[in-house]
Picture 1 (cartoon, rainbow, N blue to C red):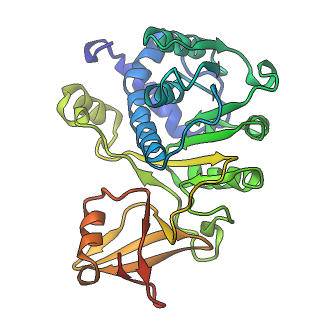
Picture 2 (picture 1 turned 60 degrees about the vertical axis):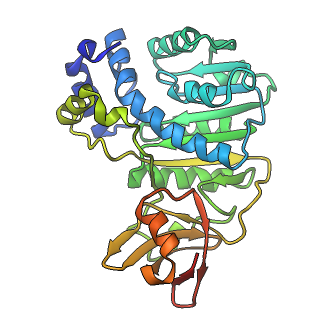
Length: 324
């Protein structure tokens, strides 16, 4: 597909559906043109978020603990395709797709096959299709559509997985829903990302009501050099510079923790020579202050927004970063 073939009316209709954020609206694709236009635009932006998440996981040494991949609520299988692109068919041998839209699942299967991956791809309900197989569960951009039954079914499936990788848009509501899911699943799993610990989420503490767990991916150069993206941003009303997401990676294996590891949430707020940084650490989520004079190297790293997922620094008792 190319920008000349995009169905703009379909994209505008889909945008309105997404903005309404209805629970369990049923299939919102009307035809193949909807799916293809979605995959070429919204889908590519989701893939950029998945690339950011998977790159961090790979850098930390994570590898899939099972050769079967389940993409639940797959849509056009952005999650499964991203996993295959990063880990390859040699690591992943079987892909199970499921979506409430049969047309979407069929397109997803063909999209994987068209890329030449030598994997077994099936469209089936994983709740009944998997018979004791170890699998990695991937979930992408579905949480706002789940009713009580859908949420229960998904979490039940997650309890059977060897690992769960879950990426959502990054709104406050999505973040809170992921924290709810983490609360239910963390007894059976270790929290690999974004959490630097396995304990209760510090965002639940009094005083953190205005905060939510979200992060930002860096759009690729094509987002600013392809003319079609400028038209997409204007017509759909999307800031192409911003790719917020919330995510959760759970695994039954225990991760190698970074000593004193801290996760930056959102973006640091800069004023003059001072930054306010919302950071998560074991047992606590709170704002700390970084003065440029205290660590110019850390300041430069945060200012450019190129910091890794986890950082280690020293703080004093007043919530001030004193070295890093």
